[in-house]
Length: 169
Image (cartoon, rainbow, N blue to C red):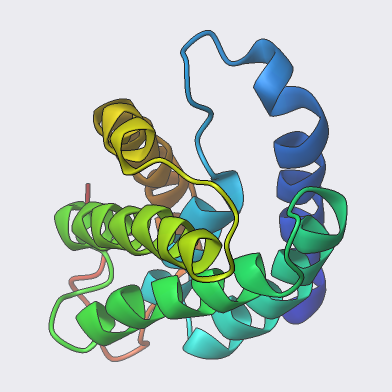
């Protein structure tokens, strides 16, 4: 996948995240689509895609949604690290490590956002944060699973691997 296709995909995800998702999502807390996309890209492809688009679209998200500038970009970059490090230990075609990386990234994002808000004096309740966490973890895992199934097909096979039949579910 090249940077242009990835950029178009992240732009579409950003549009859905900031305009449509909170209106059409039937459950309480809306999932973070950019977080799922960044984790999947860090796990499946090189970390360059994930880091570049985490910073770019994290800053756009900060401009539009957050009260503190740079928070989403910082947290999205920090969320890339577990998925990127899992890539070296597991086969990128496997789904379970990608979902686990998404769950770890969700913890980093939720508690990192709470900690930054408390650090800068913005009122944030840990009780509300913990109350929304189970639903958020389930929705993030499902969305990351779907994104992984979609994008695992684009991994380029090695021409010397005669047993490669495509992405493994």
